[in-house]
Image (cartoon, rainbow over all chains, first blue to last red; front, side, top):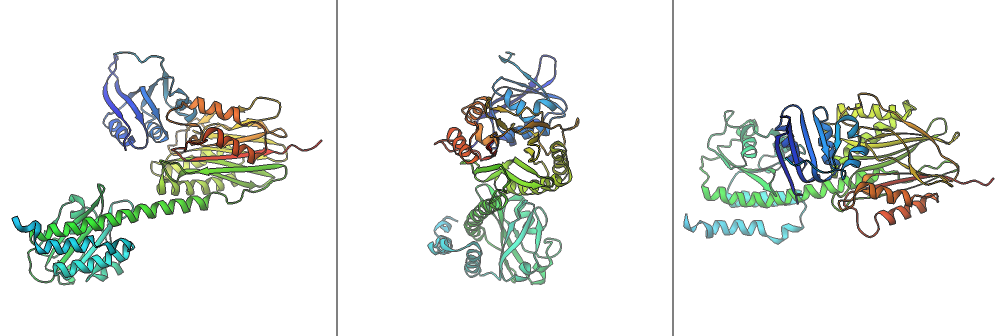
Amino acid sequence: MTTPLTLTPGRGPDGAAVLKVVGEIDMSNTDALVTALDGIAGKLVLDLTACEYLDSAGLSVLFAHASRIEVVTSPLLAPVMKYSGLADVVAVRSVEDPPHP
Amino acid sequence: MVGARRSPARQRVLEAVTDGALRDLGLDKLLEVLLGRVRDLFAVDTATVLLTDAGGGQLVATATIGLEEEIFQGVRIPVGTGFAGRVAQDREPVRLDRVDSSTVVNPLLWERGLKSLVGVPMVAQGDLTGVLHVGSTTDRRFTDEEVDLLLLVADRLATAAHAHRSRSARAAAAVLQESLLPSRLPTADDWELAARYVPGTDSGVGGDWYDVFHLPGGRVGLVIGDVVGNGLPAAIVMGRLRSALRAYALEFADPAEVLGKLDRKASHFEDHAMATVAYAVIDTATHRMDVALAGHLPPVLAAPGRAPDFVDVPVGPPVGYDLAVTGRRSATVEVPPGALVVLYTDGLVERRDRDLDTGLETLRRTATPMPAETACVRIMADLVGDSPAPDDVALLVIRRVLTEG
């Protein structure tokens, strides 16, 4: 059984590469996240504001790309970022309401 | 070939593979019986099964009739190379009517005098489990119907091999996990220990572990960790990290330094494996505890006369990606008489339908000073209760006994 997840690559207002994550990330679908990240070269913003769940398998993908990602998250996932130590090695921004493009 | 679907040959093959008696056989015996039937039904000289290895990159000769040397010599064929390797790569049948060094990589096949070969892929639940091939020492062109029928046999073999592999992996992971968790916790004067490990309902046995050991100078090491992933691969990595941590614990006093070494070891030797670890060292003479965290949730310290709280330790990145470029730090806390220290994995506090802070808060409120075994019972009751945890749960509790006077 695969957990619902949509991954949409795009560009932010400043032209930076963005990967927008909608749904939940767990062991059943981290391969899709890996493929999506591999498809984007260089620095990128990982937009997790519409991501409702992120397990340790998902976190391990984020750590693997720590050198080139910046994370935007909702308050829901902010504790996960803090306790996992991700916030120490990656720029993590927590936003109350996701900005509407 | 309108009549092919009901041909007598098809009927005989169907009977041979659906025979109910096969269900009771182990994989080795099943392969032997079915290969014997294949030899008779298809009137061939050799019938061989090669199964994929654990990594999926190679085919290993596993059972045969007529090519016993393959098994004795441990023949391995890289997927993509030669005859069987091509069948595996393309997952399509391959027919050969010339068998020599230009068509096959394994000399045993032409040394055996085979003149024609047909190989079919064994696929179960979308996974390639191996290749079945048959050979003839006469010039013979295998027909489309024969290839179709051989695929029927391959399906039956693939299902058996797949089921066998999942069963073995689950059993091996459970045995490995059990052998690595301390069966009896070490004892120390004035300190009580208790622990729990429960496999997840979704994940089965996973990569969670805990460990307790004596260190020189009256110190006790406490470890709790979680390797990302589940099943046998996670249990194997867990076993290696556990013993590496013990080795570093003997060499280095500072938990942050131990986790730093462990990170370096894991980053170098474990490909894409990540683990979170909490490592604490209690000095039983000074009653001080040094703690370091690698991406792991902080321990709870519950001392009499004050509210239980999480130990304030800077959390470093998990081990496995060598990301602690600015170094790791540990914190030191006093463990007063009667105080309880609780180490745990995320499976205890994290649920899909409850945010992490809520789980942590429930734990903080439950973990009050009480005997270690009672604390385990209470914590499991409050946080797991009657709804089984999807992810595995490990819990380790140590209490400094409240002495008279």
